[in-house]
Image 1: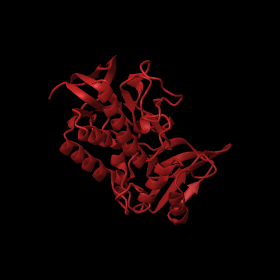
Image 2: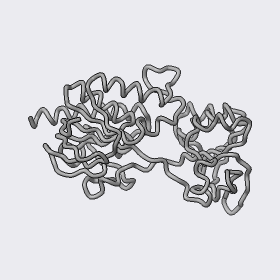
Image 3: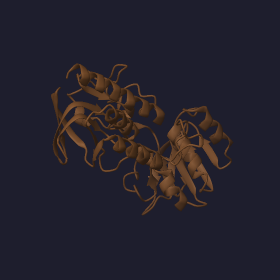
Image 4: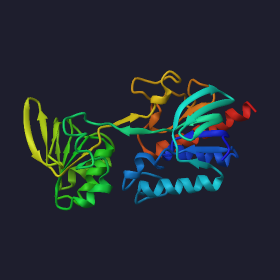
Length: 305
């Protein structure tokens, strides 16, 4: 594999894959740094809804490989490594990776986000022993069990609905007074007899010796212990931008500020998906931003050729 490219896409989620597809179709020599696992957070979603072309929804673990195949067919190359550092400037950006240094005329940052943790006792100790972030992975093993889901947005609601297909009862714990996100999910959650929503409640502790056995909930000044065989945590996303600190302008949440064309404050560097300030919070939005970033990158390269 050459180490010189027109476009290097950092990130292998749907934003990065859409960017790679568009860039490659423009005839740009394109490389995608996918990290260890292609697909990002979408891999754990059993059914992505509202994505054009899939009226019944599509599993993330199907959508991302399909997008990769399209991008590869168009000519994009892939490497299972991550960017560790971005240096230089156009037309010779240098990206340090686990497999050596790569040179790019332009860069699209689509490194995505990591699921936030609660930071409560028992969470780290019981990770993988009942503490999970993947309902489609672990739900089938919890047949007829009581499980807890923490969060109040689309991910928490969607994964609660997935878990309700397996568990006897799903306790959805939300610190707010109303669920957020898409009305379609809210309606289905509220109508599902297996899902009980606990408003104005927070998890104070995850309990268990070798595996999760329950949670301690705080509601105001009151504490309550609730039995649960597993705890699924969906309380937001932390952008993977640590390698960019001091290099690009980040907003108060650590996301990358861009203009409407996905260009950052650094000429030749673009951003797309959940790593970008103002991201709409949908898979379809990530794909659109990835394509928009590739279009802007192609225009930028054409001007500077």
